[in-house]
Image 1 (cartoon, helix red, strand yellow):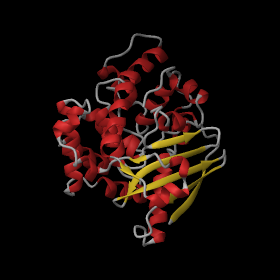
Image 2: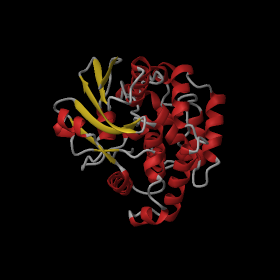
Image 3: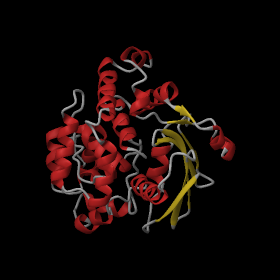
Image 4: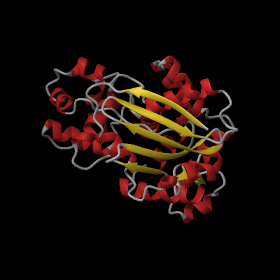
Length: 320
């Protein structure tokens, strides 16, 4: 069964960030990016079953098609709505980035950067759990090492696509659906350690997965609420509090998850090394410490995470 929707794109729309984010693993175990064909295959778990998302785009719009087992999507209207919200998050359209340029286009340091990078949107993971688990893997290590951990997790706990899906899209038949919380819990701490996870990362990842499975951490419900209500700062504070209550999750992980999982534009990523480096380059000064970076970013509320994305993009080496 195919579930379909499409999304018009604002103009201009930069594809650099989307392509870099979904192409960060050259081995492409969970996604297959075909740049020349303007297409992305993404294997994910939808309602507990492996599914294949196919995105095809041009400069004006994106067409999304999700192949799921026939028994999964009974309510087509609800499934299309859920797919539409996922597509908007993935494209960085959950909140309007144009508001940042309107508010701060004349800022002496940030303004010229916004003008040079017009059309930048922050791509998100298909699911909040993928964004949060990716943030956990990326804590205090290089992007290359984090990508390696992600790949090993996919290979150990990812699900193969159904045979019908493989036949319909043979070029994507090798992909493994990125593991959800249920699949992560099939691995114990020692198995994760064998995949090169540190003890702390392994325990945090399993704690998050268990909280999701137990209903303590309703990541998908929050995604539905954010799509329907455009979260208030109060709502975000409540979500952040629940995330911070889990051992091993700090402010950087929370704000990165809010950005990459929900499209929230105002999490302060002042502790991010790449963000601090970019601020220093923008100011033609030494890299600021976390406190100074926080103070500088605060002037751009409620767009601090979007500013961080522009700072990432300003560096020759990508940050994810």
